Amino acid sequence: MLRRLVSISPSSLRLFSSRLYSATSSSSENAEIIDTDRVKNDVFQSISNEIQAEKRHRLFAVVYVNGRQWKVSDGDLINLEGNLPLSVGDEIKLEKVLMVGGANFSLFGRPLLEPHAVTVDAVVVEKKTTNPEAHYVHLNHHQTKFLNWKSDEATVVRIKSVTAKGVEQ
Image 1 (cartoon, rainbow, N blue to C red):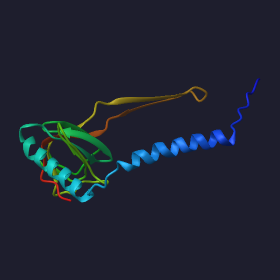
Image 2: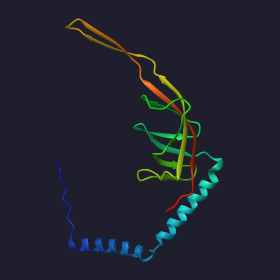
Image 3: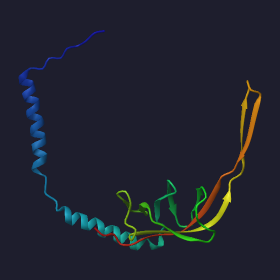
Image 4: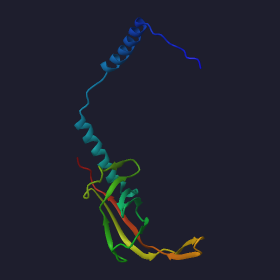
């Protein structure tokens, strides 16, 4: 294996570092200070205007339900696993909203958005059991066979609406 040694003289190192410094200093001369509060207010205002204009467009949200995250929009169905204490026809409000978005914007929570800013309404459509699945175990040396049928419970929820109100600081 051949290795190539590169030697840099101190004069060339000084020349390289001076060029690097001159390149960074020239770009910093054109920098300007931006009023971050004004920019923040402008961003919030434009998002609020988009939310008001989004009445004819669909909003989507990412909600946290039953240990999982779901991306939902109006009219979507969610199949929640497990026996939840809900009856068919119950209307619920999903309060753990992680994100809401539209065609031109997205708002992320840290970790959740404020409950008064975004509402996701849903209704329980169906409570059911899943199709039975066979769990077969054969222990060859003991000449033993186990056959168990297992079916889980599930709750189907339909998203009625995803609405967002004006954004505040």
